[in-house]
Amino acid sequence: MPIRFLCSPAHGCRATLLALLLSAFAVSNAVSEEKAHWGYSGETGPNDWGDLDPAFEQCKTGQMQSPVDVRRGARASNDLRFDYGSTPLTGLENHHTLQVDYSAGSYIQSGGRTYELLQLHFHSPSEHTLRGRHADMELHLVHRHKDGQLAVVGVMMRRGAFNPVIETIWSALKGDRQQLIDASGLLPRNKGYYSYQGSLTTPPCSEDVLWHVMARPIYLSKDQIEAFRQLHPMNARPVQPLNQRVIHSH
Ligand SMILES: [Zn+2]
Image (cartoon, rainbow, N blue to C red):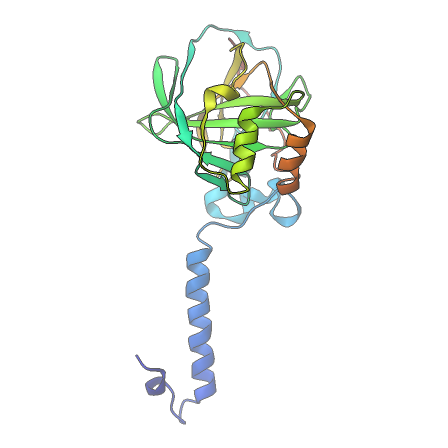
């Protein structure tokens, strides 16, 4: 409807235009604010995630939250198998982390169930701690079963030798997206791991996530850690109470 029909001297043009502008702003704001803005410090930091949006309530009320401090777990022997192929470099910077969206066809098998690799991303410092100690960074490989259940593999990343797979991902930020990467090059050779039931470590903090935290780290150079921290100086949620959960060691 043309604005001139809403605006007559009887109603007052200025008030009508102002109301129109305000309602247009409210609509566009509602669309862009479907999910609240969140971060890692200040008023939108982890301690306040649960109050930022009703959809984030589990961040505050959940009893099975991640990350956790991992200590010696109850012995168990669940077979974790990796069946990864390569992917073109898509995704990357998303304000909260660097994320590579994985192409279809890469899987893990855990507890007799198959989960497809959706994406991988990074945190600095690590989110999980091993016996109270953070690693420099942590890689998360996020998988989903056909029924929707998520399974995440966490890999500690420590300062050490230059990592060529990481270099390929970091260089894609500068525009070189021609190369493929294979996530199996980001796994430690020794596949021992800890498992427990947890949640997403970012809003909405949804639970029913099966976590696998690799016991051994992978390595990357000091310069490679610094390159990530220039973009994300701190993007790790603090450890959460374990409550009644049991961590299993495989
Ligand atoms: Zn993560």
